[in-house]
Image (cartoon, rainbow, N blue to C red; front, top):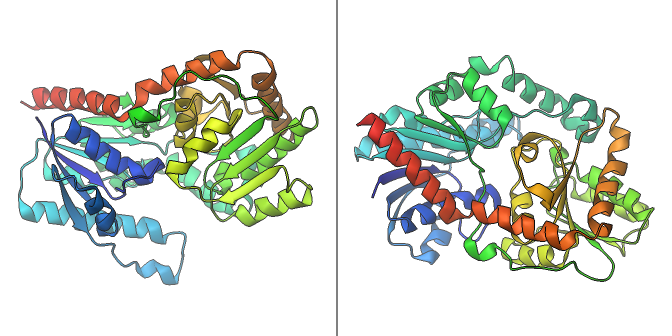
Length: 401
């Protein structure tokens, strides 16, 4: 048994993506026999209490106020996060409890660091992403967000060494867990002593589907994610349009975000209101039915560490089409996904994505692709991640000892 201090500002049961990662890490490590203490935001207390996990110790820190809300709404979440980190570190330092290992899991950010390295407890940092940058010739998909994207790219490149939070955290971590090769390179530039790969996301074992067969009837394309510029939902609409030129199909685009009205308007303008559904947010426990009813999953983020929704689709045995870059480009999922290289001309990409979807829908290999998807996803369940983390903890303690 290892006494683990888990830093997880986001820790909420019954959620997917990063919002649920803190909870899944805590419960998987506790189920593996560790003594787990979790630092998280008090906002999640009622949801955590409802689960009654008395074998996990939760330490709640209130959400700080940010003076930046009068100047920039975009910067407020980051400022709140940095202030929360300071409050969490001060709480643990004042209590004086001794832990064998500190493990920072959310947010999984290269740029924002983690102050708990100052506890002088061996720190496992991550999994983190953030080393990847958006392709510059695809700037039109980012719209008014492109100046911010350029600033972010600069902070990931030559300016990264000026980021004290990131540099100090990386250099004082016994292991830096990264979700993609670009982030691994960035960590090594900062002086990381031990960089290893691990997906940020995981799946409950019961999420893994049994053997499946290709759905019959009109094919359904599924897109899941936040309606953000970097997720490029408009690119998904364009790819669907190209697919419809050669075969009948329907599409569901599940998720909320600032671009949802723009996406709905584009669908209505194209006259597809009866064929393309944009339902907004879908609760995580209801997403399983969407994955199970779909014929192909489309993942076309122009900047992403890896992709929780991609893993979820794989777990349900749903073959995918994805862009062959960033975290997805680093994954070896065999025939489960058709990866599309980014063409030099952005206007060529929708047609290539449509061609890849057509391949999955018509090449007769759907069942084999589905089996490959579930086989790969089964290696990324939360118990498997807790077992991998346990090996890292024990190895780190042997070295420290």
